[in-house]
Image 1 (cartoon, helix red, strand yellow):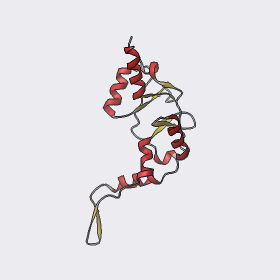
Image 2 (cartoon, rainbow, N blue to C red; image 1 turned 45 degrees about the horizontal axis):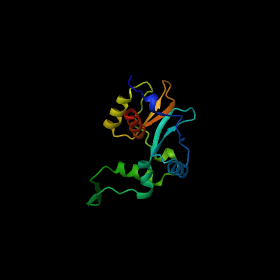
Image 3 (tube, rainbow, N blue to C red; image 1 turned 30 degrees about the horizontal axis):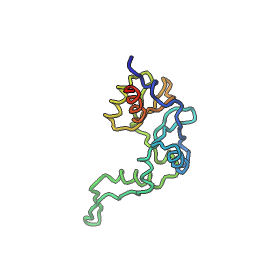
Image 4 (cartoon, helix red, strand yellow; image 1 turned 90 degrees about the vertical axis):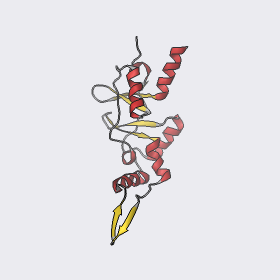
Length: 155
């Protein structure tokens, strides 16, 4: 019988709330040696994900878009909205200010592990929050979980 996401996922994952300070998240990621956390609201519903990638802006800062001046007008050569988002992340103090809250890829616990691996590969994500039918976070599936399951199958 093929393995499902529920067979391999980490149950009751560590989560963050939107109002959690970034310093607290940084300490949690470092101490637990994990690369990201699901972000949940007061009812436990997923509202986003915060990852090491989101936190990198704090250290690296934001790069202004290239522009040219023409007759006292500024013409941006790239979308200035990207810079505004990067700057907001670089200056953020709470999870809500820097988390990824759009296009969060999730999966249901009954899905085959093979489908989860394919989804992660296609979308280029490192983790999948596992949601129950009510949208509650009940687990997290990482690439490492899948590799450990593969290794266990070979033993």
